[in-house]
Amino acid sequence: MDKDIDDVAVDYEMSEDEKTILRELGVFGESRRKFLGKVGTGGASLLALQLLAEQEALAAETGEPLTSAFGPRFENALKVTLKVNGEKKSLEVDSRMTLLDALRERLALTGTKKGCDRGQCGSCTVIVEGERVLSCLALAATCEGKDVTTIEGLAEGDSLHPLQAAFIKYDAFQCGYCTPGQICSSVALLDEAKNGELSHVSDEIPEKAAPVDLSDDEIRERMSGNLCRCGAYPNILKAIQEVEGGREVAQTWSFYNSAKEGSDETV
Image 1 (spheres, rainbow, N blue to C red):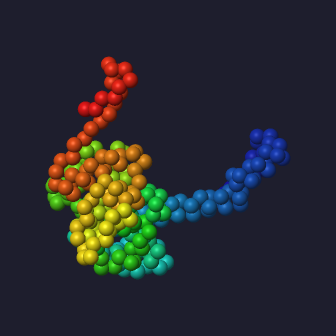
Image 2 (image 1 turned 45 degrees about the horizontal axis):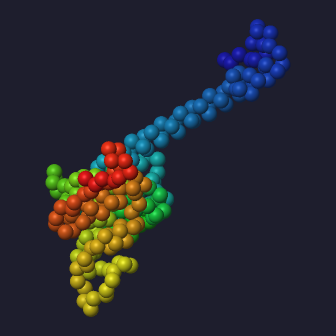
């Protein structure tokens, strides 16, 4: 049985202000029972959230639709089947879920990065049906039945895609956050040029589609939607040039030579 605060106040010689504070804190009597009830409810809620998080993690690992004992996971749930990196994946997603969130949160393909989440930085670029797509702006529901390739699907076993190898060779990244989007974008770029798709800086419009010669300006224009805050653009350009031309691209660095005051020396 709860001890009344007035009885405790006599033992400890409490003032009225002190008793008021203890009543408001819910330490004694009816207030205490209400307080303990709230604590119990909060603990049950935390347990429910933990169980739900475990189910989500399991669903992401297995690729199976999420089922929950706490009711439907999504208010606008629908089933979507995608072919991701050559494998068929069936998901239950919210109709408003982006392709980016479906890849990262439901399929655990975290190579695709969430940058601005507004379609401005290009770090979330993936390849859908052979074309570059900003996955943060594409709804997963619109990709029903489509072939989606992410950075994880470019390599063949232990063999890197030529562009992946070229990015490493030319040190075309620093922090690496934008790199998956840069590589996916450049893979699609080469296919676009091979198919004769023109860009804003293309000089001539041929009578029939023909492969486009990728000049420096062509590559820069076509890659302009992929931003690199580390400023690795020159090396990204060289990596793409090597794969496109099938030949090694010479690199030069300019630096100040203290032995020859006032002169630049290229090595």
